[in-house]
Image (tube, rainbow, N blue to C red):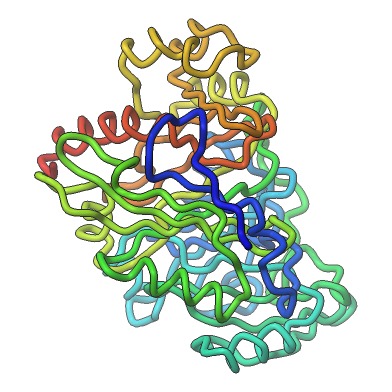
Length: 389
């Protein structure tokens, strides 16, 4: 029988962690981790500059007219185990241009590294996944063969399955290596993608929880209901799905009823569909990384002084002085497994949709439930400024 326990440090009903989630996840779809995340954007060149100059990502590959690609331009950027791809349309009558027109800049593909792209596609489509790309072998000449396939998930987001075992190029056929990239920002330590959060319409959360369970073999790790994630004005519900090795974690959020519009509903109103709300990037030096990001011009949500007045009593020693946390706007939370430090950027594009989270974990596998109320109130201040609360 699965053991479900209330998260002790939160001291709130409605937050539950499934300690056996990794064991429950099925192994018919082995996933090696997130291979890359692709954004479809209005201007790929400028987006690449943003991630290089402000976030410290190094451009490693390029595809476009010069490489024989006629409908799009793509830049591949990398920092440690994080690979981002930014892709823009070269004409207005392409699916990329239509996607950007409808959604603004947003996540199109959360790609998984796999050992067998054909088996991954077969196992998911026979369980009900919508095929986005049948298995294909992409010939890279001397660089070898890249195998890939893809299926859909919420909204227009897809999951590609990428098999790189016989490919040794910079990224994929059709891309060329950037031999002398411009210098990336320094002083940053972003290591890997910790989790990717999807926002879905009211009533869709359980549908996609079941989708990841039945189609991908994921199990539910944590459930937060609106008793935990709420303020006086708004609320949301969230369930976190994970695969068997724990390398993939997907919280799925839906709005809950409240006096005013929640941040989830604001996202849906401006993205015009279910979509990826934010991606958490793991670091082992959140203080140095956030300090450098702020110096580079990245804007973060602010937390009130009152939050830090009681923080030490709630979380104890987290290895960073409370006044340093307050100075940088970093939040902290503790559960029965350890503690974490986290911070959220403001939306990184014109529409109030996608943003990033920076997270440093010390044992905790949670998502900062003790911070949810204060975080929601900070987001609501931003919503009120936009006239969307």
